[in-house]
Length: 247
Ligand SMILES: CC(=O)[C@@H](O)[C@H](O)COP(=O)(O)O
Ligand SMILES: NCC(=O)COP(=O)(O)O
Image 1 (cartoon, rainbow, N blue to C red):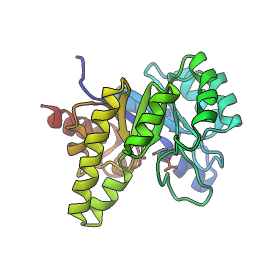
Image 2: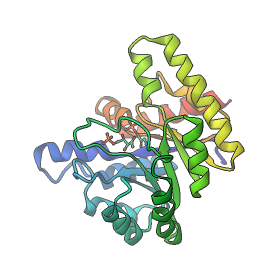
Image 3: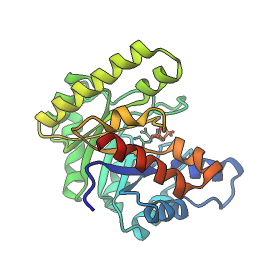
Image 4: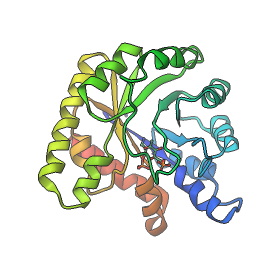
């Protein structure tokens, strides 16, 4: 079946749980293989510079054992460029990182870093990766992403989700409108459009309804929900909601 919207499952927080005890379990690879069986269209993993969850060995294991695409999220540093060129993932998503943040706070500033990023992504593209910019739905950042030769933009849905859970519904709807406009602009510039961060059963449908969005990357909520119902059923329910939004 050809799906109109793909689901990438982010397994970072399986590693968070493992690392909380310095144990060898739970295994991110095992979660990724289970997600693959449950119908995930891809696996996303973020190798943070501080290695707070996913490790270098996890990335290598994921690449060696998955048959679905691996999306390698990383900061635009020399170290990460070296690792991703050696790993050869299907996709690389460049994200901003701050050492003290609890999670990825905002989008990448492509405008400010345009010249450096143009050169930075060249070897990634040469190694066969589809390069994506993780950005806020700001038209100038979308235009800059197209200008540097990115193939994809991933629109950051974290702010929209935070506003939803804060009960700030008018502001949430304004952010949703910005995401809709951003997706349309990105597609008109020839970019493939992805979205993700913080999405849950409650927040996913209005995002999945946006017709230009080809892929959602969802992790933290799915791993949390799997504590209660298992990873396969959690993915199946997310998939059902995404498909229902497109029906
Ligand atoms: C960039 C992004 O959205 C994902 O990497 C996700 O946030 C999981 O990683 P963290 O929770 O470490 O930010
Ligand atoms: N790029 C977003 C992602 O991979 C998943 O983010 P989250 O669902 O873990 O917040």
